[in-house]
Length: 97
Image 1 (cartoon, rainbow, N blue to C red):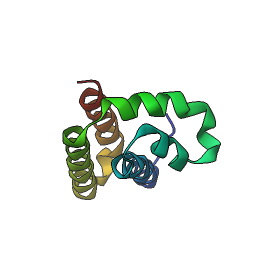
Image 2 (tube, rainbow, N blue to C red; image 1 turned 60 degrees about the vertical axis):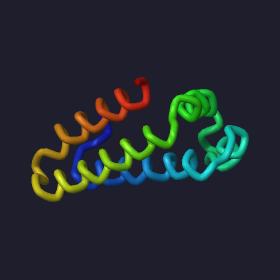
Image 3 (cartoon, helix red, strand yellow; image 1 turned 90 degrees about the vertical axis):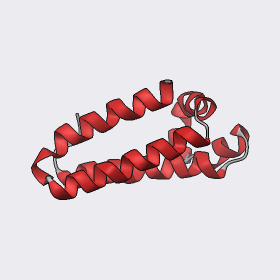
Image 4 (cartoon, rainbow, N blue to C red; image 1 turned 45 degrees about the vertical axis):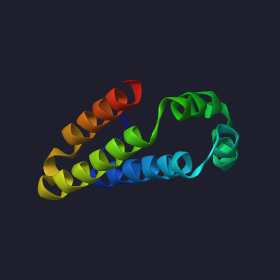
């Protein structure tokens, strides 16, 4: 609901990259929770649940999806909202599967 422009979508993608980097660089869940920004203390349970569901294969799929989305946005800047929604659905599918 908060993506009103192409730059908002880029900020969202960079935020997801930040959290994925925390997950990818952590060897166990406690280390990941320590790296999580302090202002997200209410979301620790959700972050821990996502951490447990992701593995290296899923992380690689998500990174590929991010690069594909960035390419599509550059080619079709007017479709940023539809591309962003499709990206969210794909990430959810990858995490849950």
